[in-house]
Length: 66
Image (cartoon, rainbow, N blue to C red; front, side, top):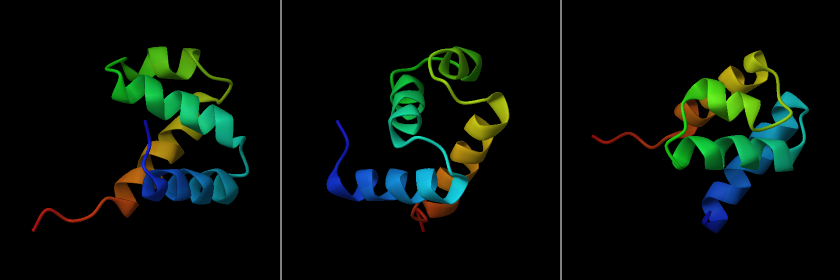
């Protein structure tokens, strides 16, 4: 589901936040599949705070649309 670029980004985020890569992938996949934030948090072993940090880090790395 993820491209090589996305996988590299998730590895960077998991390393930066010192959380399990598989849990980051689970959370992101749930969010991509249309689940709300609370369901995404409940679907993985990350805390709500960690999930917010994951989203923040993804947003920082998102290419500008300009």
